[in-house]
Image 1 (tube, rainbow, N blue to C red):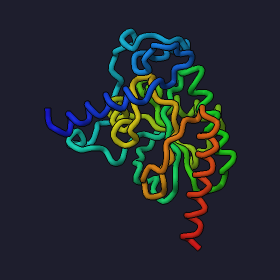
Image 2: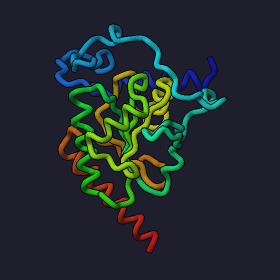
Image 3: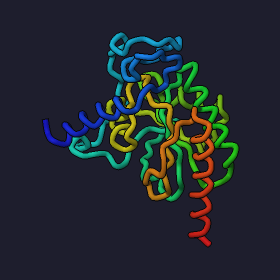
Length: 227
């Protein structure tokens, strides 16, 4: 195993241990966040009981990508078009992970994104939702899901792709644990240069307010640069 791959694996293990539970309502004391996942019925089950069927790839991972630490992603938007995170530069964006079959936490999380979309409608900020269940969340599924939240096709983007690649996007780009139907309950605010400005637990009222203030600050700073 090459050194880069070793660091990827070790880093992801450390991230999962530190991140705590994600997309897992009702955890009791003693339940490790990385040991349980939510199934289609919203029930918590041990991760080892979850389906181990590999996700069907959406695209071929670019040649040589396993040799590098990801600094940008190349995923499929709900429109069916390929899009890279480099194309998001020039505007701040809020990133999060979800899956469409989640009946509880993901719905609440995307309701928060919908609130952000309404608050910052028409302003140069985007919202990026990345599926952690790409075998199910094909572009057409994401398109139908997005309609439930009145997601603006230009401001709120939904992405899918290869699961292993999405795991790497979570770990290497955003320092978050991602697995099939598992993700942290966090929003990441990325500035117009592609740098992470902050990480926020949307379930925490203070952090939720801080996220909104920080989005406004980035927009103000961008307006000052342009004037």
